[in-house]
Amino acid sequence: MVIRNAAVRHGRRQLAAPVGRSVLLRHLTTATATPTTQAWPGAPTEQPPSPPKLFSASKKKQRRDNASISLSTNTGHEHHGPQWTRSHQGRTPKQQYAEFERVQRATRATGTLLERRYVPSELIAHPPAPEDVSLELLLASQTHMGHNTSLWNPANARYIYGARQGIHIISLEATAAHLRRAARVVEDVAYRGGLVLFVGNRPGQMEIVTRAAELARACHLYTKWIPGSITNRDVILKNKGVKVVDGKDGELEGFDGYKNSARPLVPDLVVCLNPTENYTLLYECGLASVPTIGVIDTNANPTWVSYTIPANDDSLRSIAVIGGVLARAGQRGQERRLADAKNGNVTWQTPPSLASQIKRDIKVAVNQRKEVMGRMQANLVGFTEEELEILQTEYDGAAKSVSEADMVNMMAEASVQETAEEDAPAADLASDIAARLDQAKGHASALEAEIAEIRK
Image (tube, rainbow, N blue to C red; front, side, top):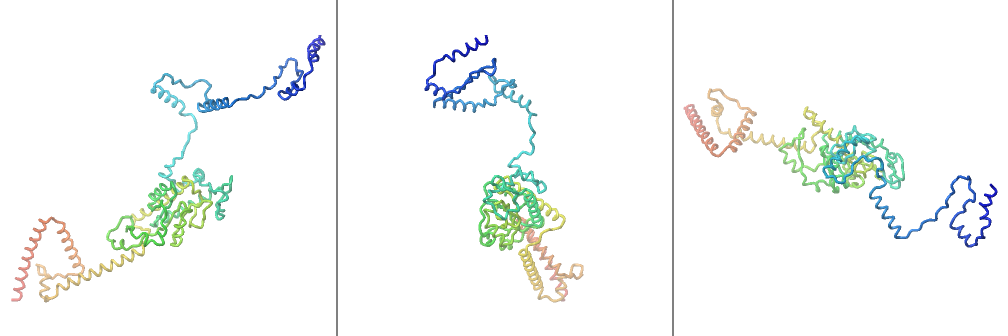
């Protein structure tokens, strides 16, 4: 039986007609050979692979349109599980909003709680203090990102941690150390009453510079530096005003002559946030011996400034952190100075030009006082000793000795009376003058009578 079945199974193939050569070649090029026997009698037969499908241009365009439609509808992210939301078909906007609130309440506690989110305006409104500087903050602020390795300055090799994908990486430890040192410099200059200038004239740095100057009670510059503003300040800044203040920053009056003749001020410290574009400013500061603080990137020259801060100068977030830390340091120095001034300890010295002007004003006041004293003594010339005694005698007959200080007080009282008379109304002033004239006439007549009796 097995033999009969084998003959029936293979007899047809043995008795088949021979295949032509062309048909055989076409069969070999279009399909692969299939095994004649099965590995197991009950195993399924393998189907030959189908030939590749050919599509026309219209078919390809239709497939692309279908793919774009599926991407726009986001069918790949559809939820095929149990439906946890309700359909909005046939619902009013009020019912849809109620459904939205229900979903919000149900999923409010789902997910990760994020803290200390980055808000660009927060760094400007509330900048960090020097003690808040950490490697995490500097890393998040992108202060470690340098320039391409082909653009580096070899003088910055001590600040570079390494290179990654052709970009230099700045050492965050060096950045933190130099930033804290610069903050101490700014605080000490502000405590000594120095003038600090914040400079940053790149797009987007205006708010950072103005906020830093506001906190530190300093000056700011967010436009192009005018060449010669330090070396030729008498010509370029000749029309700029000058104020004279006391230890508590209260403006003093009576220095009009000094304000008109005083030279323009020179900053005691310059903080430059983009030294690459302000070479002229830094060069003038070097000629005038003005210390400078600058943010040095891997392509900048660290010898241009006195105190370097190796960091990324192209990132606004990095510049906001650095400027905010220095502003907080200046604010702390100003607060310390004002607190000491309230206790009577002034931490700054009067400028030499103002001190010499005060000495000149004192000499002029002394000379005017001597002239007034000489005029008063000249008015007494022509009287005899007896007449002078009568003029200096009070009604009780005791002689009154008038000293130089008493005469100055009399002059002050007379000047105060004159100013009071000028401020009084015209009617009251006229009546007061008439009363004083009558009183003076009475005293004059009494003196003439006494002199006549003495002569007799």
